[in-house]
Image 1 (tube, rainbow, N blue to C red):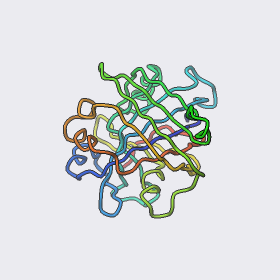
Image 2: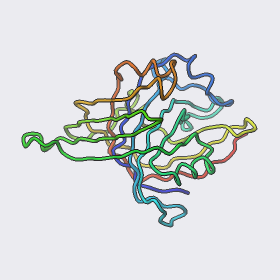
Image 3: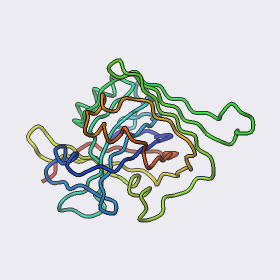
Image 4: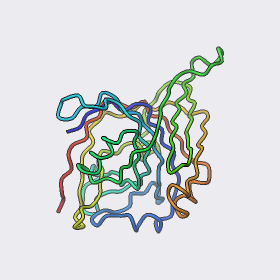
Length: 238
């Protein structure tokens, strides 16, 4: 089991046509939709106090950038709703290696930094700004989010809940079997986002299909404060 505290999880989401995701859908899973529409999400987060089997590791903290879509088991119960990662990038080579070996996830190591703090203006001291910056294949990218207001929990049945209430990760083995791992955590408090800026070339990162969708402004931008999280080792499913 791998444990860490996830902080300042930024989730940018776009509606997407089913046809762009079906080629990446493992057997045994179905696309999960909100009001009939599938979604992809670009997610940035910072992990700290990393532990494996209860023991502290090196590195203790790192940043992650991933692109995911939303699924459920085709013949399972609703509490098995989860995500499939199209790509994951982290700021640690060791973490990327462990992700590929232990979880068989498409994880790469890239230069990536994280910063969090209030704006410089004195009249905006209650606001929070979160910055992520990365370099991938020579392309410079970044994400800035400004949030203000009291934290809240997503309303049942809302898009916010659909995007954040996920406790399973899925992929497939080299033999085509479905593999799943459980993600144990509390509900994430959300903070209202009042401004954001995404700087990257999505087509260079994810191709013209999905990257073309991400060229438009994200209709949904969330900032989750995060929580202590445990990621259980994967198991093959029938």
